[in-house]
Image (tube, rainbow, N blue to C red; front, side, top):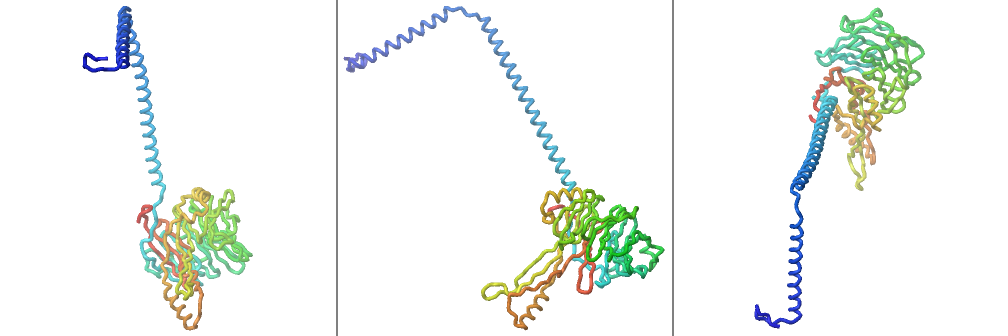
Length: 439
């Protein structure tokens, strides 16, 4: 078949398909025209159309307005919640900063305040920053401004041997324990008397407690209000912690142990255990509950902190054998002073119950530097002269302990005992406060 427009010859099948498409297009156009005619024949209610538009517009407007109001309320609620959270965090941070104590740091090398013979020394106490040292027959009073090893000696009645001392600056009271023959007493005297004259008579002393049949009374500890006295009663090598009411003067047994110290409230004391050589316990006096704090010696509570001595063992190999095994080694212990923050017994009780070993969370205040080189060299020379062979270990236990550590009430001075053979040195070091975590 011939296409007149393009002068092309096409097949009959293609011509049929083209004719079919043209026919369908014409039918579609006719259908559309018919639909438009039907639409135009129906009258339009323009008033109803406007009313419907208005109703739909107001409905959508109210819906959008309600959604906007809800979104606005949610925004304000989130804003208020964020402000409350930020305020709470700020208050919590301020509270934590106020509650957290400053860190204590020893600011200098310890110096010797007083030297005494070990067999004459009995006990010592701090009165503010004055040092009171008790011997078997006198009290040595070293005021703060005195030079090292300068002091005033106050002789006590000679019929007695004196064992322990405790003082209270608030009540201006000093308490002593003493013994003579089969009698053991706890006596009280005014602190002012220690700064007057050179000796003291029985008229200046008030007897609080008198016992017989015991070996002695040691480790006196006055409460902060000076109303109660804790002490250790010894009989047949058994140490018993007791409490004496200073007004009623009635003693009460607490538990076996030694070195008691009072917390801020009178409901708790801390003491060293009776069986373990270095264990500290918290005793609840109201419930008679005893909780293990951890390993430590010579506890002393002052101004919201518990001070104690922690024994740390060190071991060092000096020489090796040809096969690499240790030949000669040295093993020694150091008694370092550490502390735990605790305003009162309740706070310490919470920390003890929350921790299996509270000592691990304690802060180190001071560790003595020891010069053991000459001891090691002398030992090696002796081994060489004797032609000894290893392995051998040199034990230097108690080479340098900070014994009986105490801190002044103003937390400005650390005092401890350093034993050196037949003598004992009372050492002192100034301490200052720094923000936790920084030096």
